[in-house]
Image (cartoon, rainbow, N blue to C red):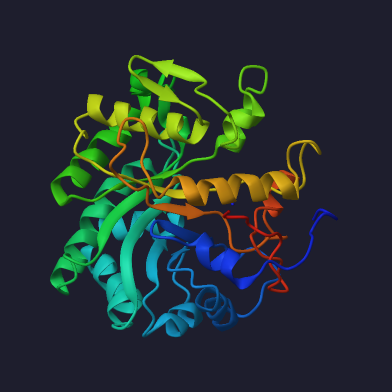
Length: 337
């Protein structure tokens, strides 16, 4: 993402947050705030049994603290580094040596080469070549079977998304996307998608009901041929799968590399602590299964974010996505009954 309420309630019992992170759930660790030291943050992941973590850039303190743990790590390469890494294999080799190979006891799962790079912007041409060079680099150090290389995109890449079977990538984005899709197919890597039903609802609340965005609709809302959609999350995800099929990426898996709901900073009826709790608790239960289009596949998903980040630029909502306050107290209870 272009990276509190008074109704905080009591600290949730340990079991709530431990269940929060079932088979398919991770949590993004953004750092744009007055936050605890990285070692304490990693201790918090361990304390609450959070088994997957997304880091947006190399962080030596965090990586040191992760050594020897089973936590799966998605490690990002900053957009500012893409030009250098794309044009120079030695730079890619050095990056992997420094940030991956130097931590042999960290459980790296993905390298995200850039985050939400503008498909029409100056950095777009660097993403595909940078992915190639990082893939070469991890192959050279014998980690290609352990680590998958990808990049994280945002749903703005879709021209059509309704109904989900009509999902289609924007034609003007295809020069950016096609080499990425070819790379992912070739290397059997997933596409990373930052996916926010909150923003879809916010931008189109005349036509989208809040309950459809929060997983609380009591029945099917969208019928798409033989498939029925009861929540917006599945609809957005399956629209991406449909678009991939039309672009030669039908074999690919999608990892939801960010999703969540802000607890403050916007419409006071919508961006509430309670809605954030409802969205994230329902998400956690939901992703253990699949979507209507791919019902057999649990959805690898990362909640945004571990903490509120008070130094994030942009709208006020940007600073209120955390599961935890910066003092490490949980923001709300998540009910799994």
